[in-house]
Length: 163
Image 1: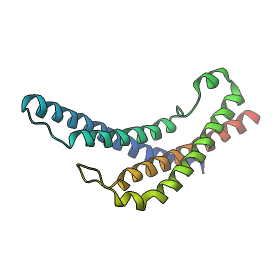
Image 2 (image 1 turned 45 degrees about the vertical axis):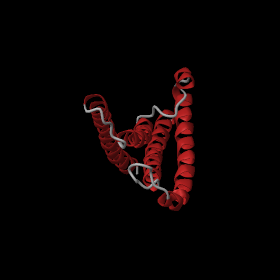
Image 3 (image 1 turned 30 degrees about the vertical axis):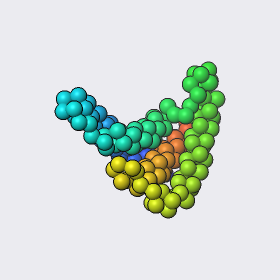
Image 4 (image 1 turned 90 degrees about the vertical axis):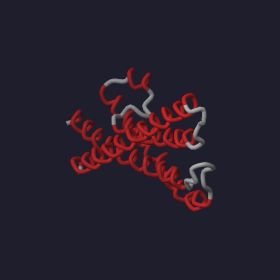
């Protein structure tokens, strides 16, 4: 089971990295285009700012997923750095479990909000708000997968320390 969940976690992490990198690239290009059209052509585009805002959400949400994969989120570093041995592993288990629980609530209520988001669209790009809800839902599902992988790995570490 450990090998399977780690493979799934690695796979979704590759997707999260690709999506986040694409969003960063889209943000950079959009910002460059905005600066160019505003200051060189003296005629700014109306959609670049909105695109940057949406891409920021994508980067933040998938960045959270990537950080969860690497165990750097939502750990409290001060406490984690003070703990040693089993205490550190138990703390990591608690953080992964909390991420699973919170992510589950976000996914559940995100799915409930999808119909409402389908009715509203962005002002300039006319993108349904449900697209951003999907970004949040998918990134939180990735966080849950990474957290389950972390829990399985940490339980294995605890067993090795006991045996």
